[in-house]
Structure formats: structure tokens, C-alpha cells
Length: 376
Image 1 (cartoon, rainbow, N blue to C red):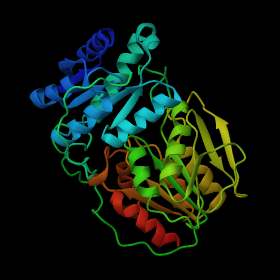
Image 2 (cartoon, helix red, strand yellow; image 1 turned 120 degrees about the horizontal axis):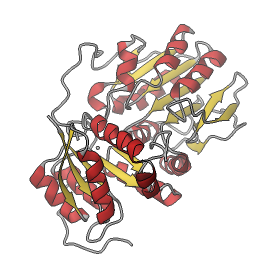
Image 3 (cartoon, rainbow, N blue to C red; image 1 turned 45 degrees about the vertical axis):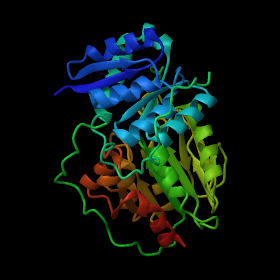
């Protein structure tokens, strides 16, 4: 059955182009369009799409407000389109907090210049997030609110490593035969020298949930690898730093790992760690699908810290992190995976579980407290 999509944008050109691109895929059906957030809510309720694409800045009601109402009234995976600017990053992170599953940069030039590449990337993203857990996920929805009367709104590569234009699952995903038990025993304390966390789709909200549970005196340095464009990671690190008791910053070449500090890999580049506790930032390699790549950071940690790494793989598409986790496991380090029920996309954690690399499988809300138990 085709994935039903609702396209929301106040630009007639963009609505048409996105609709044309999606309609050309036999596995996708555009069931409606909307020009503002208020229409988006009405159409979502009436059409019950599997995925909604959403612009932010629209008349009558902006995209973030619309996402909040949709998540409360008819939870549906929402894919946001965003600009590749610091302000665009801030707005996109707000949309993810409101309940959107994922985002893509909105690049009108790429639509006209690289239509085939744009089509492939956008359709792949739509089909992937249509299988997300948004309708049944453990993420809390915002408190119920009444839909207000219309008010005026304030006036490439793929989103995770390559340039493009810039989320709802059909039915709940059936249990997979390889799925690990829903929860593992509480961890035993160990003298870890590094905590490394890798994630992709759903990661910004997941990382926020985990890191806000850590105390300011958390004794182990942390590195974070989130698939995210270069323009977004600085704003994301600043956001986490304001919300968390530990410090968070976008990693720079030469940064020193220290307790109570989490370093976020910069978008578009690769992050490695060495045995002296220093971070090395390398240019993104065009041959790699992910920039930053979880496998690369995990692999460098395995080489530098042997059995003293605690690696955590959170929600995300694909299998990035599996091979790096394999190296860590061979060296005696510990690997945790997020459980299926609390993932937005059970891809990266599933790859860890299916490869029998997971020492423990925990729900998202338990991971932060278990990190404290394992390290303090």
C-alpha cells in the first residue's frame, strides 16, 4: 500500500514541486496539500496521512504550532523543511521538540538543478520515516491545547551528510524476531574513561532526554555523534548546553576530553579521539555516507581506550555505529542500545542487537539514570 503524504507549504511552487517529486514514486501517494498550519491540522484530521511534510514560516499559523496540535490530536510523522542557517537550525530544533520526526534542508536551487537526486533523497526519507514509531512512540506529547483562532505568523546534500531540498508510520511495527528483551538488568559500575553516544533520526530529542538526566559532576568525558548538517550542530550544542547541568559544546580540533563535558561532532566533518584525551576533527570524506560518522568515532575510541569505553546507540535509520561497536566489543568495551519501543526509528539500535553486540538494551528514559549508575 502506498504511503499517503500531506504536503504543507505556503509557496505554490514548492507545494507543486514536492508533490510532483513524491507522486512520481509508485510507493507514495500525495493525498492533499495545505497552505498554512491551520489547514494542515484540518487536513491531517480529515485525510489521516502517513507522513506530513511541513514548512515553518507560513501565514495564519506557523509550522511549529501546527506540529504541536497535530501531535496532540492525530500523531503523525512530520518531516520539516528548514533553511541552512543558524536561525533555521534553531527553528528546526524547536520543531523536533514539538514532535516532528526529522528534517531536510530546503534548497530551491537543488530542486531545479538536480531533480533526480532530489527525488531519490526525498522519497527515500519519506518511505523511511513512514515506518517510524511516531504514532506509538513513548515520546510525551505536549499538553492538550485548544486550536486558537487563526493569527498571523512571524514573518545540496541530504540532511545528514549530503545537500538536498530542504515524519508517521502506518501501523505499529510488528515485533522483530531479533529484538532483544525489552529491558536489561541495571548496569554494574566500571571505571570508564569515555562515554560515546551515536544517533541519527530522532536523536536531537533523544540526546536531550538522556543528557538532561546527568549531574554536573558526571565523572566521565562524553562524545556525541549526531547525523546533522554543518549549519545545525553549533546551534544544537548551544541548546543542549542551556538545558543540561553538564557542559556541551560543538567539538573543535584539539579540544581536550574532560569530566562533565560533552563534545558534539561538527556536522559535515569527522571526529576522532586519541589516548591522550584530545579530539581530532577531520574534513568530511565524500566517500562516506555520514558526516559525522558514528563508526569512525567509535573506532578511534576502541583504538585509544580499549575496554574503558561505554558506547550507546540511540534511535536512527541505517546501521551506522555497528562496525565501530564491533571494534569496541572486541576490545572489551560495553555497548548499550535503545529499545525498539522508545525509538523513533529502530534502525541503528536494531543493527547493534541483530549483530549480538548489545550488552544491554534500555528504554530512552532509563538510559540517563543507568549512565549515572554505571559511571558514578
